[in-house]
Image: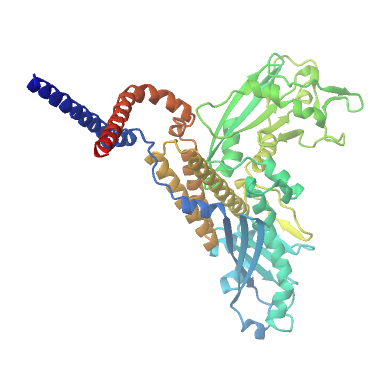
Length: 568
């Protein structure tokens, strides 16, 4: 009997130890293997991002460097003054826009005398011929300006004209007959005129400040700069341009417009010149029975129907619903509408806020496009057979649309100082210096937009830790940061073409990273949903392990208490 009881106690004691070891083993496996494995397999993958470089971009410090060349022709300097050229001067301007944005402009002006071939070019009979001849001698780098100072007695410039600005990057300045004094005194007299030419042919501080966009408050912009910036479309990799002919009365008017030939003649040269800035695509359409959303009023004094400036804002929405959209492209759309009024509301005239007739009979809407009213009632008599065949004068129409297109694409109007004369851009629709001015502002705008996008994305990813950052996003962010740094460096070096190229790459990469669909997978996956998923999985497994561990602790405490009692 004693042996049986001893054996039963031994078996019970072994089972207790076996249970303890089993519980400890399971707990050890769960803690040492299960939890790390679960943590590793369920963790959010977040690729490395260059946060330190992104923080540096948040504090934007831009330096725009520009080369200016002033060439003295024969008769503007004394022999003694000519001995001290060539020489160069550097002028710098600094502007603290806000606590995170600082601008610095660096102008390197080089002074020299004209060569023999340049003197021959300046001897041409007209300013247009002289501008073309000087361009053929040497093409100036993108973003630079060359000024030729000619004697006051020269007949090259028309009477009363002090400065002539050509189609290229060249300006002619009416100087003086050779003056005495030092060269430094001569340059001091010339400097105000040089600064006026630079404000006309190159960027101004107001243009660059407006290009910074959301990085600065609107109150820092002048009313004129704010209006110009709000009129033009924001910088984009591409634009869709749509020309629409609206015929509300096809039973009375059979309209014909050679839109393809007109685009090739008037619009395409401008788009070809703007190719470094953005890509453009052009399409056209004819809409029948499309009427204005506003009923015009008849003016007895003018014997015509009129649209007041107050009613123009209500014209666009009804028409826009009929224009359609290109769903395959995310680029902004520029709409240009040619409206031919029906016979019952013709002629139709547009009036400005002063109740005066608008000479072009057209108007434009900021960041949307333009509308031109084309009256045809005077082209046929009351007994004409309907529908009357109308051949639209595309030269007149495209002249209006071309000026509106320039404004929409960011080519700002030039405010001339007294005594300035600008050469027409001609068939190209855009001068070289206007293109440079646009490239300066677009480069700064792209850098500002890309840096804002990247810093916003970095802040978002820092605040929400369960967003997946895959390798593609990390690559796009790194590419954007690298392109931004390169664009800033090229602006500082004065390489405008490369700066624009890198800034476009930066804004494309930053937008691809910011709008990547993978960022939305775990964006709205809060912690309470995690608990709702994992508690049913882990609770049935953890409760028995915890109870076993608690039971073991209780047995250890009882055994210790029994040993103390036996000793006592």
